[in-house]
Image (cartoon, rainbow over all chains, first blue to last red; front, top):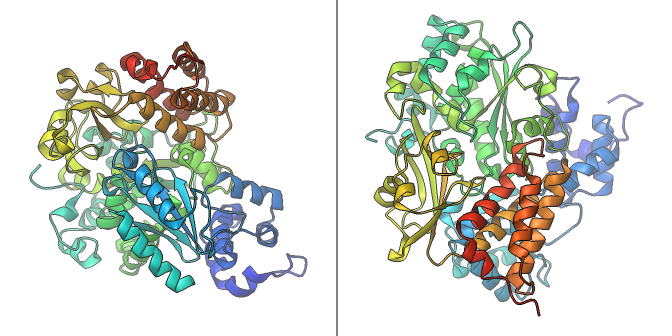
Length: 173
Length: 418
């Protein structure tokens, strides 16, 4: 990074080698391609894509913060606001709905005492409804988005989902 | 089918381990192809095989490669692993369980296209499998099966995984390229096609995961063998994703031209709970809905036959619905999907999906009077033929076909308006 380059922020300070490895995947004159991997990196660092992270990524890639911010709005896996420690994202799209996913989502919410889109009072779990996740043959299913990445939980029942919730609460509570 | 050609992991345990894949002939086809065949030979064999794109469009793969602008380098191979069509989960199984056959296919494609860089654009939700794929790429590279000077030849190939972040539209190849370039995933005006100006403005081949997984067997066993599977114009095996009201949902690898009846009843165990089958969506949310008549059930699932009964094969994700299903509700679900996934670039799609959803939601709330079904149909027809990419077109198909073929289901929601 040259003296005229961006102010070194948390991402560069903590993840310099990883950022360099990401940039190396793309031609040197096409570093804008690194914006999506860097947004994931920021999200895992902060839990969501903060304004400071937008500015830092923009600085690294010679983009404007607005250009980076527009991607956060466009792509549904990026979040510009904090939520629960874990996002429980239940697929209720047509194939899953045919196998009871809407009822499953409603019952999970009832058990948690929240509505879809809300976060539990302890701040641990946010339940969201999402579109097809390519797990149609193992419905009901949901994905878990947290600071570690995204993982699937398939062939679920309300009981198995609530058992998972209890585990997560132990870990994050 | 006796032995799987694409889902070979179902016959061979641990095929996702490189040494097992190699023990069963893996990467031998790549080695022989590089040693014995020119890139043009590979293109000719794939053309002769009749392989058609498995992402949904069904365009002949070898012909697509033939469109690459001559003598312009570097070129790129981009693998479409953005599998997001409701009801489609075949590429996921291939990448999770038979990843090295895909990687060998990518290498064969790159050799034919004379590209030295390939990107696998994987939907962001496939986080775990994408990271496993990166490990497998590193393993193959370490054994000189990928990377610089493969098998000591002049052919080099670096393969990178690029994660999307939740946008159905990025399965459309030009939107995918925009996304790879770090922009909003919105389709480009064509021409120019990706073969002329694709990734970073360079000649680019974009192929689906399943398409590329067909290449090692085609190059190993020849075009004639491949053409002996399937039908005259739809050659080869296909992975059908079967979901909805069937006893045994899942992926089934069968020859193209297998009938709906064989898939649903012989392989899928029929309709769950012994109920009667009412309707079929043969290509996820992106095709007209079919009434499950005997004529439809006996239709061969290939690129020519499904249109003859009024729908499309697409990505061959067959969603089965029993007689408890209200087709107006199906239209509500698919419309909610398309409204959410419309990228917003074309007004007819952006506004049209919004209004279709609004009318459908009001219909389902029971508060609207007569004529709403005709209004819905008129909005849908207004979108037709007016959008840059097929998403706008897809969005209306379950709605228009639903109203035409299951009108009573919709009219039943028209309250008296009071």
